[in-house]
Image (cartoon, rainbow, N blue to C red; front, side, top):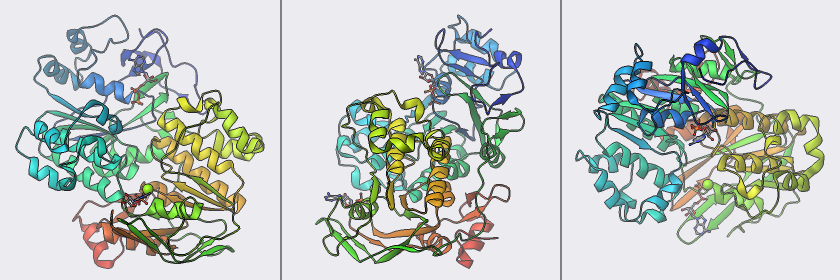
Length: 538
Ligand code: ADP
Ligand code: ADP
Ligand code: MG
């Protein structure tokens, strides 16, 4: 047997009803005596994209290591042979797969999660790297599809996060393999790039390859996958892959916090999206009217039209990478001085930058209690912000030793517990898993509603944008050259303007109200484009 059982609820919210005997059979790998345990594996099927949805630390990467042959799973005993694995999976769809893997008839290719580590491992020009990967003579095609023409002659160490991501995806796609795994392909990409990458990965499956992907942007996962597995359990302790589920139904069950076939509730509350096409928009008192602002960096110029922000509202900022979103937020935060126009207000502003610097010596608790000790004890903040983001578990850790996702949660918390009139959050979802993104979204909404404060949030995750926003601010222009910030508008108007530029339409799921991207050229896609309704339809 497996040595650890799932008798006790790790969270008070969890009830695991179907119990250990069944699970122990599915025990795939245990790292050590008191270490992480993985139960069950995802399916792998030629011609299909299998999506994986679940929190960090529940064994997604471990499963991929097993499926790509990097780990011989010990089956939670003393096994180290593929033959035993094949025997253990007799009758399972994976039996055949493991046989082929053992006989080296399957070649796996992995696009790693942390693309920012690539420059440490690979040196040289992008062109050389990708030429080496090109096993099927598809170089020109893939470069064009991923819009990498302009970076081919650059050194890998000079690429931005979004460029590294696309180079890594290109390097995987160029190889001729049987099994492709994409670990978080949307990180650092804007919405247009995310859906484009999703389409490219889909084509791979359409050409008969087996594809597995972990993705935390639910709109992308939805668009990308044929079936999904939800992974649940206790991060760091154990993880269980659910049965494969239809993508739509699987994501809906995840949002409800309840897996029907497994009879498992893993979150006390469900996440629902407001179906009404517009929220309150412009009901509150005016917080501030900001003037026309220009920032000219020489190579890049941003012009922001004047606009109004209201009290108690959340305004999301959307637009491609390199269009000036961060520049705008920095001007409002007083970090960058506008070239034209002036930000001379009496407002108190709290700012979470896109790139978080860690120069703090001390624990998370020290840091947060210096900012606002009172709010750490406040029960509203505890239930709405601190507990859902798992911040108390981080209190004793050194700030400079936090992982990317931990640091992001601490930075968001630090920004939100400050007393301020205006909260500026630049890309809060980066490095966060789906559950954490939902928790951050709820926290932002509830805090602004309760306190009557205003938040401006730069974001690419469409479900987050939909969940938190009262209004939208759209940035247009030519990335890297010039950008224009339009004034905040209602969601419908803003989304139509934004998505028309991107060329993608969304419908709403009838059960959960969540936005779903329409497949390109589907009946709905064509109808909605004709009507000019890119986002809100009945
Ligand atoms: P995910 O991809 O879902 O974030 P991982 O599969 O990377 O999860 O990790 C699951 C758990 O296994 C984590 O708690 C991690 O610390 C632990 N783990 C990963 N690799 C090892 C290892 N080689 N030895 C011991 N524990 C490990
Ligand atoms: P976004 O947040 O929309 O991705 P940014 O505001 O970060 O865009 O950047 C817009 C453009 O301005 C980019 O081309 C970037 O390289 C450039 N830029 C940003 N900061 C500076 C700076 N301090 N000096 C020169 N150029 C800059
Ligand atoms: Mg930015």
